[in-house]
Amino acid sequence: AGVGVTGGLGVLIDGLSSTDTLRFSEPPELVRTWCFDTLVALTGQDPGFDPFGDPAIRATAVSAWQVWWASHQATLAWDPANDTYVSP
Image (cartoon, rainbow, N blue to C red):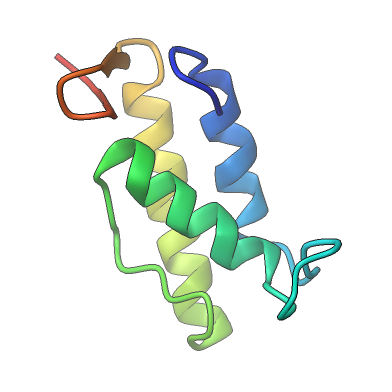
């Protein structure tokens, strides 16, 4: 997701369910960890996702992200003062 391109946030949310590692990362980093860190940095939201936590709890947090995305995607705008997406 780049500045002003909210559609990338949905891709990051999908990545929370990944079990892959990022290519060329040293040390190896899980895709879901990178997606989570990026989502928190871009949105300021954290529904309790733990990339290394219990899979059932992770799934619940992914569902919370999906609900957040469904209810905010149409109104999100980039706030340059805070370097995050906000929903009015």
